[in-house]
Length: 488
Image 1: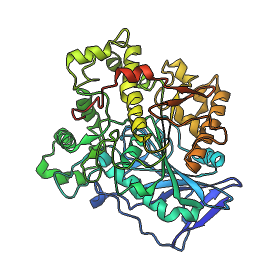
Image 2: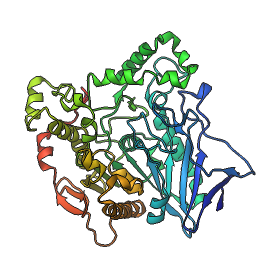
Image 3: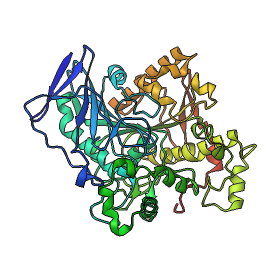
């Protein structure tokens, strides 16, 4: 059934039923093509008395793979309850994909599924929003050192532009612009962490749910410039002819992405090829460092077996001897750390080691820092079944996302009913947190985290609260403040 929202000289026409209305493919910025390629997003200025039809998923950003993609990708989707009597909390999803893949269009999740906010909207009573941002070369390579026709951190600036659109327009959809929660997984979680280090962005949201973030996937300016030079070399373009990038086809621009990834992976395994750039002016510092804005409630977590998704499908990574895991440590220190993992190097040992240094330990860096000034709730996702069990990846990276969106539950065949029940509990906790900053209702079962009492919610078939369940891992790395960068 057709539904309409009237918003500042515009009418958006979506679809809906008695429970949920959806407005899919709302443009929040001008098409980033032509002279706007590699530039910060330009705010959209559409005025129309004719209804703007937004009833189908938008296209995904340019990336390698089988998805239908386009440079003209700066859109967002909104799901809202059909009957609203008061301003509702807003939850904004920022997808992951190593800053290289993903999207809010059809099958944009990276695992063949579409991010559908309907169930989250229905069960949380919140406005649910998903947004596109530019990826890989288009969003996270920094050419700004070579020409003023190129900006840096474009992908992050896309997210900020979308959040500004939300601040200006969400009231017309029934949302409370003063109660916005960001939630995101992997690179999406890392982007939320980045936003907390950007002074111009912190007024745009009020709470954070950070899932399995690749926290150390950032570059300093010199690292970013070096990588951009290598990219230009792969394309055969000189720095003097940098503006040739504005005329090449999107397909040509991403044609060397795999080769660029090999260059990065030959040195270090623990960061993504494409990363946000710390320039000290826009993005101030590393996500994991104490500093700037820490005054927002946070929920943060990771899965128990994150890295099995990567080691399971790469014999090279599962047999890595340590040099690319700890690229800036001497041989003796590498040997000391890897000695804690029996049968290293091997699939099981490398899986656990990479899980610890890429996700588990950095998660606690953030929790320790942020919990000193605000409420932090920490979880560990242990549940797995079906395909994840069959492939021996267990509770790996991204296993939690289908459950929270109530999509692709056939992945958990054998325990589909359990997955559905768990999904309802997760959505309830997320909705409570978005509404109040506390994931609990009345029982206060999930206690907040502190250095003195590092409570962690174990998310399995049954939820349980444990005090410092990863104590032994934290002890091994108690003196480490960075794994994948020379600077600490």
